Amino acid sequence: MIDAPVKRGKRRAVFLDRDGTINVEREYLHKIEDFEFIPGSPEAIRALKIAGFLVIVVSNQSGIARGYFDEQAVKTLHRHIQDKLSWHGTSIDAFYFCPHHPTKGVGDQKAVCNCRKGEPGMLLQAAKEHDIDLANSFMVGDKLADVEAGVRAGCQSILVLTGYGRSVSSRPEFTDVIKCPDLYQAAQLIIATITG
Image 1: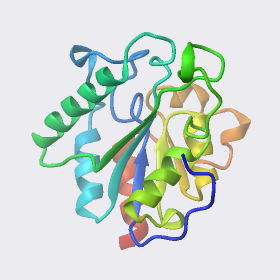
Image 2 (image 1 turned 180 degrees about the vertical axis):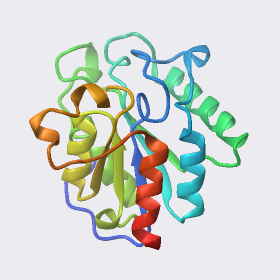
Image 3 (image 1 turned 45 degrees about the vertical axis):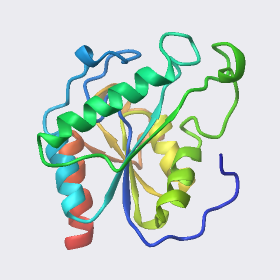
Image 4 (image 1 turned 135 degrees about the vertical axis):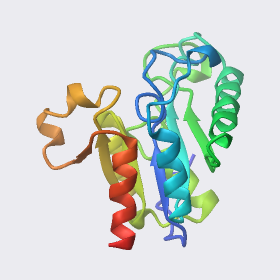
């Protein structure tokens, strides 16, 4: 994982949390049959890509550390998401996930790391690998960890009110955070910043 600041890249990206942002929140989601898009999410992803953004998923998956499922289950679910998105004429450019938890789990997965959001490690790694300009990129998610990861990476963070977003949005730490009802509305706001 990356510890040093990443030099400014050339491409804009929108980093997306997965569960509660793209798809309906299901605790420790790993089964294809339990996956369901939040309405408007595929259209949001397609619109962002048409506008020229990379769309990159960054997801904490501590269910791996806890032994609920393995990394292969996550990768299989991500292939399913890509298949579903292809029906809408779009796709995710890259998936990153953190398999760690600082206090739960066993072996190497029970670890303090810099990839678990709210640390920025996954965003920094993606920026290096995809030549991303973090200062002109966005992080969208439904939890404080998503907002914090975006801020620490140097992105503009947006809280969506799907998933856990509505229940946490009134907390003091979200006072100055941009909020949108869902990913579709967040995408429209993001696109407006480059077309407006």
